[in-house]
Image (cartoon, rainbow, N blue to C red; front, side, top):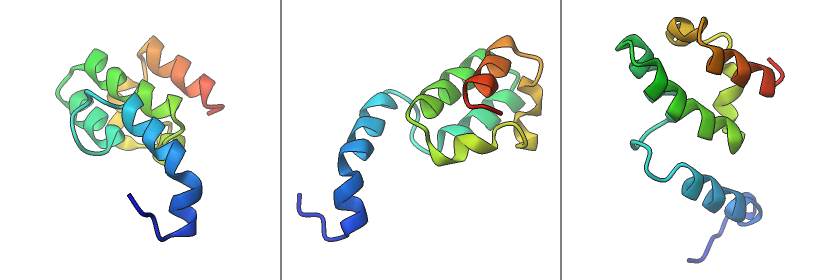
Length: 88
């Protein structure tokens, strides 16, 4: 595949790694999917979406501490650990 954008050329390896790390997840933004799962009272599945996003440093992961839709996860130990791992 030919990549014209210099930014994309530089970041292509990271993007491929991120894509493979998130393989098997539902399509879409993992943060938004986690928010929906949290609203559906499925905290374990929500965290299953958030943790890989944080591992690959998805840019939106920095907002998980202030995202109102993730409030249902605030008491979850995995969520607290994830925030600490991101320095939030």
